[in-house]
Amino acid sequence: MSESNSTASEPEFGPPTKDPWKGFRGVVAGALILEAIVVLLALPVVATVGGGLTWLSGTYIVGLAALMILGAGLQGRPWAMTYNLLLQVVLILGFFVHVSIGVVGLVFAILWGYILYFRRNVRQRMEQGLLPGQRD
Image 1: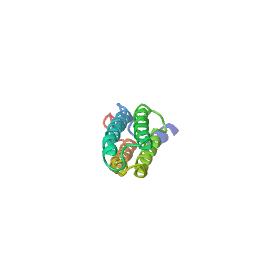
Image 2: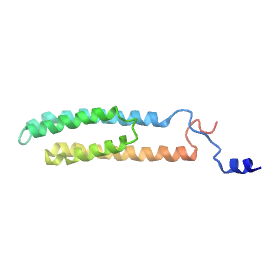
Image 3: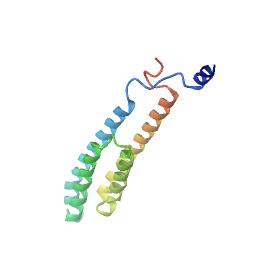
Image 4: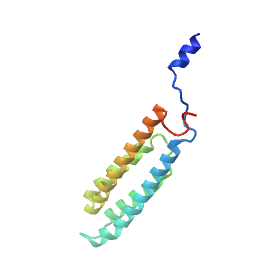
């Protein structure tokens, strides 16, 4: 009899048939690769506008792009989203290196805000059992 009481409180749906986080990790990795490309495209802008490309600005841009490419491969880790958001903070701090780098950081901050919203939405829908394959 106690079994019937415990099953009544359990949700009527199971885990999704396909892992939604696998697709999410792919989206995030793709965003990081795209962001790395855009950051590297800032090299000619920094070289042409303002004081030109210095060892500091060149190292900053190339190093940040390399960290983004590395981060694309680390999306399966539990701390990956923290790493991604720290990269965004470092990119926005690029205002101190060159204004164009900081502007790129602000543009991508909007994208990462949407990614966080999307992540929260998927998590809520999974908890409510609204994802495809959860109510089979």
